Length: 183
Image 1 (cartoon, helix red, strand yellow):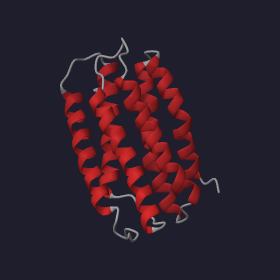
Image 2 (cartoon, one colour):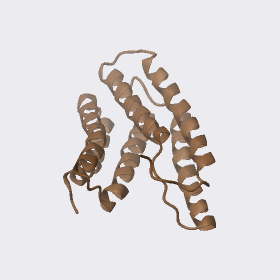
Image 3 (tube, rainbow, N blue to C red):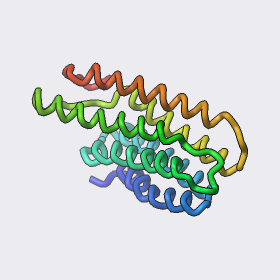
Image 4 (cartoon, rainbow, N blue to C red):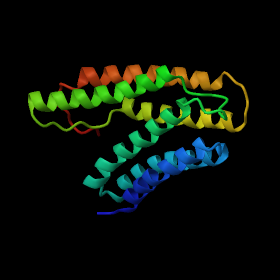
C-alpha cells in the first residue's frame, strides 16, 4: 500500500540523484537544500507511519534502503576531490561507514543462515548513527556553501567515526540474540 509515509520515502529516493547532480556541478546551496529536505523526510515518514498505526511491509523495507542510499551518496560525493569543495569528508571515514554497513549486512546474513530467519529491529544506536551522518552532511554542505574554513566539520567527522564504531560493535554483539520488538 502506498501510504503517505511511503510516498515520503519514495520522495527521498527520488531526491538522491538530484542532490548528487547539484553537488557534482557546484550548486552547493541547492545541494544543501535538497539534502536537508531529503533528511527531514526520513523523520516525517516514520512519524506518519507510527501516527497512522499502519506501518507497511513496503515502508519497513524501503525506509532503510532510502536512508542508506541517501547517506552513502552523500559520503561518496563529499569525499570526491571536487574543486568547489572547501571541506571534504575524508576517504577513511567514508570507508569506515561503508565497512560498517557491509559488516551489518554480512552479520545479519550469516546469523540468518546459521540460526534460521530472524527479525532484526532498528536499535537506538543505528538511529543515532543515521542522525549523526545526516547532521555531518548538513554541516559539511553548509560550510562548503558558505566557503568558510572551519574546524566544525571535522568535529562532525569525529562524531560520525565514534557512532559508526560504537553502533557496529553494538550490532555485532547483539546480532546472535533473539530479538523482541522494542516498546
